[in-house]
Image (cartoon, rainbow, N blue to C red; front, top):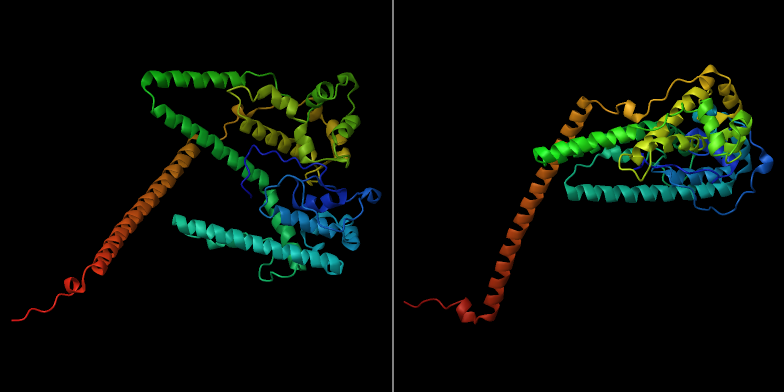
Length: 417
């Protein structure tokens, strides 16, 4: 998954029509998805020409291709009807993909065109990557390059078939199920790199300066930890605070159903992941301030992700990565909602161990060593090329001198004895 950082916030709400999001739901929970129960009277009329997606890139390297395929399939009346009446497990099992045989010729022609464009795009990117690796002296990982084509059948680059739709669904499902895990791993590497840089900087200081820097570091850690109490995400206290401070309503009048409708911003009857994450902003503002030296906004986004994952695990009973009104109301009746445990923030939960940091630093050292070796090799190659160029220049000068000298100087007559 695409080069996305931990601080990236996906803002994809209200960009697609409801029926489009139903299939995207089965591919990636980070999109505004809509389950089976769709009011078809509210579906916008099909658009004849393909329009480029307007929403933020999702992180998948085939993001645009995925969106355009779903957009066009949704325009076919037969496929759209099957889409609305197929549950998520059947979609993942490939049953929906078989309906491709029944879509209109116009849609199939457009899908063929999209696939050809995607194949050409991937071939171009792979060639560029191979050229860049070759210039850097890096061995090409052919297996990794082939994985770029897993979401389509590259053996048939001309037509979009059932296998292509099946591959697209399965690839996206697999990639996006690992999306949060990869974000956590990215964040851990970010934190270890930050600590590594801090320790390396300390090594450059004298004893007095190092002592002052350590004291300053402990001081800002203490300042960061000194914040108001963080309410348990998804608890009554947390939601009432949003109700009062963000919505401007009396906390004594808190009503779960009204709250749900207020914060279901796209009105589809579900809390998606972005709508849930928006509910935690007030809590995060207690801990993080972008103007404060001690507060890292990358850490804030990691905390937001932790909160969202926690609420999803507690409330999303059918594991479709959406929270329905029924699931939300059910959660508000539980003891955990009324009497939650405390919430431990990131500073109370070490992201990595000293052993993991040591292994990370050893990995950095090996990378630096390999880079130095490649740099030395390139320097030697450059020196050799310069030496050869000097030889060529000398030969050229000699030939030029021979050209201007008289022939009897260049080729003197034989001596007569």
